Length: 111
Image (cartoon, rainbow, N blue to C red; front, side, top):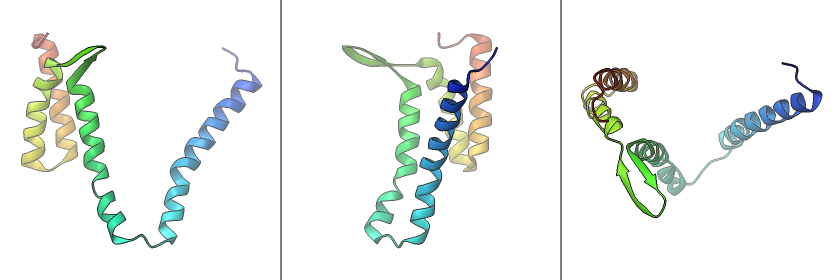
C-alpha cells in the first residue's frame, strides 16, 4: 500500500500536534508556581478519569433509555477491585482483571 505525500504530511502534522499538546503544558507548568487551591483541585483529576473509564466500561448506553449494566465487565471488575484494595498495585489490578475476563469468557458467564 502506497502512501501519498499529503497523507504523510497529515500523519506527521497530527503527530506533532499530539506531541506538543501533551508536552508543552508540562514545560509551562514546571516553571510557574500554582496557587494551593489549584493544586488541591488537580489532585481530584486522576480519580475522576478512572471513574469515567470505569463507568464507560461497566454501563451500556441506550439512546432514549436508561443505561444497563454490562454484566461481563461487572463480573470481571469485582476480583480486580478486590485485588486493588488488597495490593494497592495497578499491575495486579490489570493482571487480575484480564485473568477474570479470560475465565468469564472461557466459561461464557454473564452473557
